Every structure is written in C-alpha cells, then in structure tokens.
Amino acid sequence: MTATVAPVAVSTTPPPPPGPRVVPTGPRAARYRLTVLLLGVGVVVLAVVSAGIGQLPVPVPEIVGSLALHGNELLTGVGAPAVLPVAAVPVHPNADATLWAIRFPRIAMAAVVGASLAVGGVVMQGVFRNPLAEPGVVGVSAGAALGASTAIVLGATFLGILTAPVFAFAGGLAATLLVYLTARSRGRTEVVTLLLTGIAVTAVAGAGIAFLMFAASTQQREQIVFWQLGSLNGSRWQDVAIVLPICLAGTVFALLLARRLDLMALGERQARHLGVKVESTRVIAIVVIAILTAAAVALCGIVAFVGLVVPHLMRMLLGPGHRRLIVASALGGALLLLAADLVARTAVPYADLPLGMLTALVGGPFFFWLIRRTRRRSGGWA
Image (cartoon, rainbow, N blue to C red; front, side, top):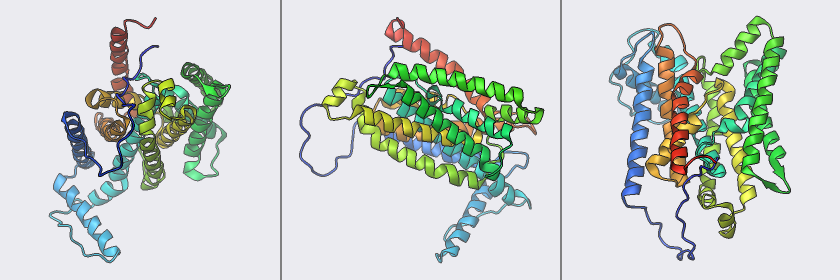
C-alpha cells in the first residue's frame, strides 16, 4: 500500500529569535476557525436536540431550564450566587430524572468516545503516514473484545460491573504491546511489519473469541455478541468519569506530538535530520493510540471506522497540520457519534440499534471510496 499522508511544508532555515506569538492569519487559518466554530456549535445543538428526543419528549426550553436550574444549584453549593436565568422547568414529573440519569450521561459518553476514537485515528494516520490506517488495525479493538469475552465466559465479577470493561482495557493494551514488540527488530519498527502483525493478532484474537463463544452458555454468548456490536445504552456518569480523564490526557499527549508528527510526514530520514527521535515518538504515539481506543471501546463495545472517517474528512478540509487536525477531529468525532447514537435509539421505536453497525454502515462505503480515490491518485497499488 503506497498511499501516504501529504507532507507538510516545513522550512529548514534557522528559527527566528523569540518574540511575541504571532496569530496565524490567511484563508487556511480562517477556514480552521470557521470549521472549529461550526463543529462546536453542531455538537452543542445536537446534544440538546438529542436530549429532547425519545420515548418521553422534552422541549428544548425545558432542557435549557433544567441545565440552568442544576447549574444554579451547583453555584450555590460552592457559595457563588445563582446567576443563570431559568426560563422554564421540565413539566413532566419524570422529565428531569430522565434527562440527568439517562440521556445526559449517554450524550456525554457519546461525545467523549467519539472524540477519543477520532484523536486516536489522527495520531495513527500521522505516525504511520497512511490515511488508510485505523486504530483497530493494530489489534486494539480485537484485544479489547477478547478481554471482555474472557470476563463474560469466566463469570468474573470481582470489580462489579466494571469487570468486563477492565478486562477489555487490559486486552486492548496487551494486544497493542504484543503487536509492537513482535514487529520491533534491531531497535527499529517497520510500519508494514507493524500493520501485518496487527492483522495477524486481530485474526488470533478473533479465533479466541470464537472459541469462547463455543464454550459459553447461551446467555453468555448473547452478551458477547451484544458487546461486540457496540452500544451506549446504560451509560452512567460513573462511566463518563472513567473515560473523560483518559480522553483528555490522551488528547493532550497527542497535541504534544503534533509538531513531531508534522516533521515525520516528510519522511523518517528528514525527520531525524530535523531532530525528531523517530522511534521514541512512534512508541509514545502507539501508547497514546492504545489508551485512547481501549478506554473508548472498553465501556461501549467496538465502534468501528470513527478513527478512519473523521480524521480523513478533517484533513481534506484543513490540510495536514496535526495540531489543527487533532482539535477539529475531536469535535468531528463527538459530532459523528452523537448523530449515530441519536439514530441508534430513535430509528426503531422501543429498540436500541447497535452503534457499531451504524458507524460501519457509514464507514464501510467511505473506506471503499477512499481506497478507490487513493488508488486512482497513486496509479495503482503495485
């Protein structure tokens, strides 16, 4: 596969002396600000709309009023005056509880998981210099699925309801480390070897899942299948509290890697000449990818293609600079998964469609289009 991320134009002239920070200007900077603004507004609007749609409809003014009411309670709780205007409050006796116990945690979880997967995709495509790369390629998702399936079949409950997610997180990290250590030779890691090893580990993990399903009871088999399909049903604030700090930490590390990823887009040799420690950067990037992806799929199951579709769309809009890509992709991933989850819980009355199925329905055709587009531009794979 010869497709590569377009290199970033980086000057090799000595840097200018320190001075006041210059705010980027020009059409590309304006497009970036407009894109981030639209994505941010889209996330907020879609979150409010999603909160109001369901078996118990809640009008938007009542949602805003509920947010203001609880915001004022939080302010008075810390000794600050209640300054938020409350224009309306939920009329239905169960509306407020429905919003805060069911819908808001699910919406927050969708945004956090989408952002994590998209940022992981940006880092992976940058470190592998390939727009077709996706976090699942290095075996994170398959390892997480194997871990969760093991916990289900063994009936492990020593951590309560978090037992399966913890097993999934450990499985994702273990698979990533196995892929990396297997692909590493003589202090170097070849990208092609890493990707092929990831495919092999994914196949072995798939065989392990198949064996566990064969040995499982009917109820356990249904649990495994449901987990692999992906769903945000039953998300709680405790789940958000677990995933959110990991997502924020992973995004911060990704932003710190952005400059080095830009230089690596020029090629490994050029990056080394410009002072980039390629191997250590690659190790850190793989760990960041594994943490972001494993944390995201541990609690909601496998959600495919978000890490592929969103970064590539943002790259077409904003260009190859990774700092901007990471910020825009985080918002884009949140927006995409919010929309997918809204469809998942409202498309069929009194049913919750698998989230992974919906993202695959979008991502599969997009991936096919991306392959044809890349092959046409490259003149074929050979």
